[in-house]
Image (cartoon, rainbow, N blue to C red; front, side):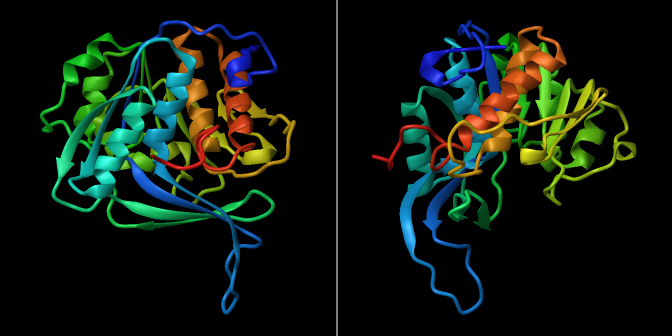
Length: 290
């Protein structure tokens, strides 16, 4: 288990290495709104805090991986050729992430994450998810040098391109049909067992991954093979659960890419998921975009 003061991995010693990572996936421009309670019919809620930032699974995983390695993290994505798309590019690049963008003649996807006083959130998404695909004129050759790749959105051919990496992980939200049609062996398939959009049964998979992990928030989760695992308790009050699952997934990819066993990888993932819940919005120490 790991500890690095700068990143609050307080449960064990962690020394950043030089592993190379790529994320293939989506970005959503999200407005984070803290309210006294989640909206109900006829109720007027009062916002206590407001933040807007590029988020979505791809962005959060890329940012978390950047915090874990001294090497550049490559993020292959698609954005609308509009104000929000350009803001996403500028902000994520300022975070130290190397973006490879396929520009689309569609609006950048937007959304709202409303967070109550217990740190629970309700998300509303506006517009289509913009995903990169293998026909996009991007620097796909960069994947050849990667230790680990995580895919949150893409087509089956991108799974084939990415399999050159030492470790390849994804989420069921990509689509089980895409995963099955790729015919690619996965090192990790990681998703929420509480989110209807990510729930699936193992017999729906044509090829079993090395590890299937189904998260259940504060109740821990299940790993196949292995069985149930427990969550770790928050050291601070839970503020916002947005991004906790993506932070957890980044920890799994890092651990497996480091040749850790699944227990060690889960330990890092659980710490990263917990730490994410202890600040407002998906990123620590940011107030608003510039």
